[in-house]
Amino acid sequence: MKEITSKFALCLKILQKYIILVGFWIFLANSNICGKKTGNDIHGIEGERLMIKINISVVIPGMILAKPIFDKQGKLLIDKGMELKQLYIDKLKKHQIKYIYISWDKNVMPEVNEVITKETRQQALNIIKETINNIHISKEIDIVALEAVITEIITDLMSEEGILINLSDMRTIDEYTFEHSVNVCILSLMMGIALKYSKDDLKAIGVGALLHDIGKIYISDAILNKPQLLTEAEYEEIKRHALLGYEMTETIKGLKEEIRWIIRDHHERYDGTGYPNRLWGNNIHIFPRIVAICDVYDALTSNRVYRNGIPIHQAIEYLIAMGNHQFDYNLVKVFLKNICIYPVGTLVKLQTGESGVVIHTDENWPTRPIIEIIADDTGKPMGISKKIDLTKNISNGIACRSEVI
Image 1: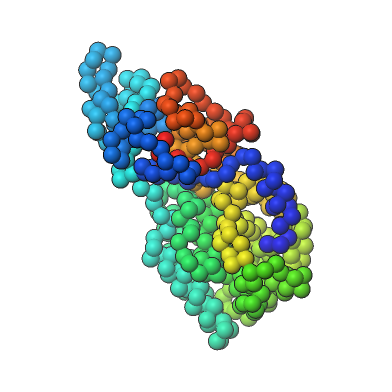
Image 2: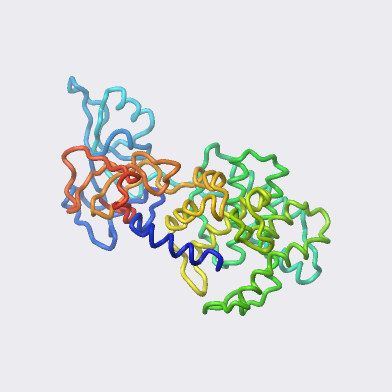
């Protein structure tokens, strides 16, 4: 990661005004917001429930109605306490109801699906551990076993049409080496599926991503896990892992050349500043270009012995800033279109202190959605509608997800 350090630091200085902490999905609880306790009496709530007024456009199934709704003739449409299903939401829109009061309760919020099943993740974790162990002992790789677990991951990812990768679900394994390999594999396959690659190509992408750092088995742990800044010689030693992995896999039967290109070229950069061969542009095969994006994203957001991971929104902003420099920007856009950062309905707190609900996201600016403000900087509910487009308000940004507004 040393080759991006200076550019990354510069990008963060430029982008630090944007967003301080990213929110991923609606997760409401009666607790702290940005480190401050919010009193229940502000919004007329009892116990753990919070009543807020929101636009019908951001209502989603699973929300609880806090006040009864009547039509223009005074006829009851939906009573308070009802869980809103899509049928009810459509009914309210048909009657041109613009705002409703909802009761937030952390226990009734819609669940977020896991990226892959726990069983599949564990299989992937086990197979990468076994692979590394086998290489140490016999210099062999069980391609059949690798492809089998890749097939399971593909099946999980394709099981629900239109599924978005929830990035926070990626941080579930403790051991970095194995965690990183599995995460890069999942993200790379997500991109491959979005690009509509064949099953055979997806297997190649998946196996290559799972093995992309295999050459590090020849690098000293003392260097890989050194908490201090690496010397130039140590950094050059780490850079050898790409070629070492490529050379080591030359005799592995059944390993496609595209897989070996991923192992060798995942540190090549679109502008020619990478290693080991300083390839640039389309001279880098598209598979390692895909894996490079996922590799850098996961490395930036992971905690290491020598540094803490950066917030996810900063990693996303970095990928955007480096599009068509270090990375193929068309592929960066594919990555962004298939991840879940701020779903519509997410409650957020802005840097101005105002609180609001995400009502629209722009695929070109995934960290800067349009917000409908529902409370001012003192926590007082808004009496009139106010919308803020963060793509047009660069001086403002999301400070944190709002656990309570």
